[in-house]
Image (cartoon, rainbow, N blue to C red):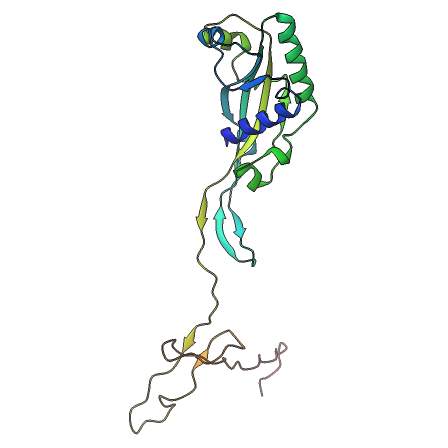
Length: 239
């Protein structure tokens, strides 16, 4: 799921014109050594915090249907996670970096959810909205200054980006649907006893309109049901 969010963010930023302008979008950790090797304008989208949103955890299991409408699997509800990114711009001059950050901010602030056309993999299969907040971080996420300090670099202007994405639940394959009814045939009677013989028509329980079973199938035939007796009123004697 995380790599699918990364790819959707990459496509979203590419549509803003960064790719056409020769700006590279990467997801590396912006350490001091990494910054020293940069030679082209770059927008760095660094993921530094992942936390589950327990308020959105569900229970139970949902059913997965095939094209014919049969249940083929049962899936636990998805779990939601908050992915917090640190978005920074790298160029030769601070003015160029600020211009890149402005362009990125306009792109991110224009949408409340990652567009469905940019989603792939399990995110596309679930068909759920993937909200994002630009300029925001999780309530328990480390601050930007702590992140820059941990990376060993100097504090730079950056945009906090928080994405809430669903992680697909676990699917368990369901048993195939029942297409044949239970078939019962009575055993042959001994000589001299009354009752049905071995060649009596077989009965197929609960299912109507099903043909006679083959020689290896078992027993078949529709089941005859007696009509339901009428209800007797209180105090009425049974005839």
